[in-house]
Amino acid sequence: MTDKEYAEFDYPHFVECLRSMGAGGLDNMLHSAVGISGESGELLDHMKKVIWQDHPLDKNYVLYELGDILFYLTSMCNCVGTDIDTVRRLNIKKLQKRYPDGVFDKDRSINRDG
Ligand SMILES: [Mg+2]
Image (cartoon, rainbow, N blue to C red; front, side):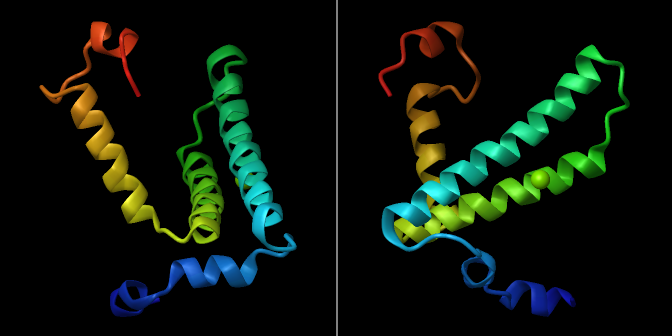
């Protein structure tokens, strides 16, 4: 895929076409949420093996699992009629409110309001 083809690629539509399960509505949302959790679990399991079982860190595996998570995140975005960029923007806004100095603050983390 060329850079131009990549820039024009409709990933949300691609995800919607590939998602094989889900009868619509809440069923699609649950399928997406289970997918996010399952793929996050695969990443977490890899980290468990790296941290506690002396396996080597496999950055390619991490990248592929992040891609799997992105797939289901995108699927959930499709379900609620939004996109990853909007989610990212909302997250930035939330975190800038929580950490106005732009750095982690333990007290602000503990005494958060959202
Ligand atoms: Mg996976």
